[in-house]
Length: 58
Image (cartoon, rainbow, N blue to C red; front, side, top):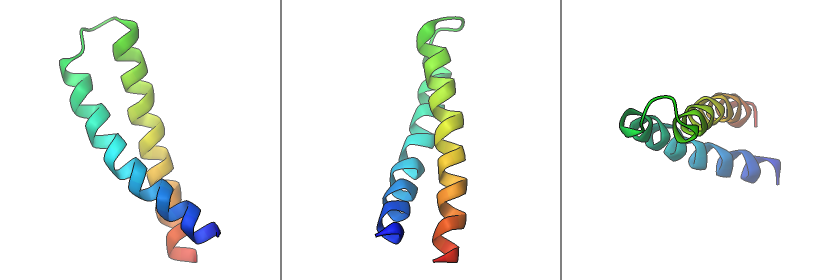
């Protein structure tokens, strides 16, 4: 079950990170939308990196 969880997290974050990063370029600067997109991009890259290392261990 742990492998399935980290595999799902890896797949989701590998889509969310680039999408939120690209959307961040088109968001108006200094708005709540850009702050949330930046937070999403950073968090999804962190989840991607962590789940990538978890997948290799399993």
